[in-house]
Image (tube, rainbow, N blue to C red; front, side, top):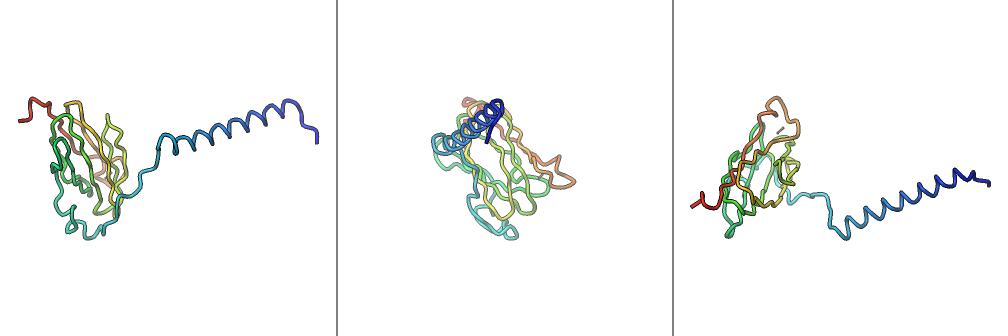
Length: 161
Ligand code: CUA
């Protein structure tokens, strides 16, 4: 079979790009550890309010400089919707929804997650800079979606005790 020289160049280029992308995908998983966030557990959304730890939403300190926030999403608010921590804290968010699918985004951080009824979502993020971080639902969840937000207040080390 005769292949036109120009055609041959494009075939080689196309194969090269395919192989380069394949190597990129494999390297990102094996070398750089990229992965999709998976569910951190399962829970019955109808009994969320009675199921620990979601029966007691809120902030708790788990070690010096380390906090955990149990956060329940519902139409159309987060419980709690205000969290106050000192700068330099490492905060683990443990989230679930009691009704429909919500989103969880904290601008100025890498946090960008889905909150799915029946699943537990977990992420850890460090807040070094004092200031106010608004978090919000980024998944359309009904008529009150646009008011579904809250804030994290990171206090400078001198301000907190
Ligand atoms: Cu919850 Cu949009």
